[in-house]
Length: 101
Image (cartoon, rainbow, N blue to C red):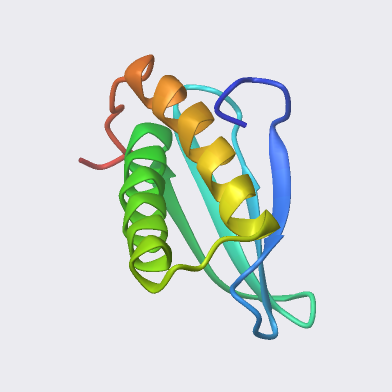
């Protein structure tokens, strides 16, 4: 979404019964809808730049913990690749104010 290829995505929230639908209509704001068994439970908006920045921090923390434990597999390789892409996207974005801020 940050690279403009898509305006909607759906992802599993951890391994639990929740999914998150993300959408943007531009302007750097992302709408998030948390679903349990396809029923909306909670909705929020966040700046794309803030989401990406948080994702970078989380990925770096995760990879550091994996490295400390000597864990490496296809998942850590995928996270490393995604982290590189995310960092390049973060550098091109500036935070946009949310409605009401």
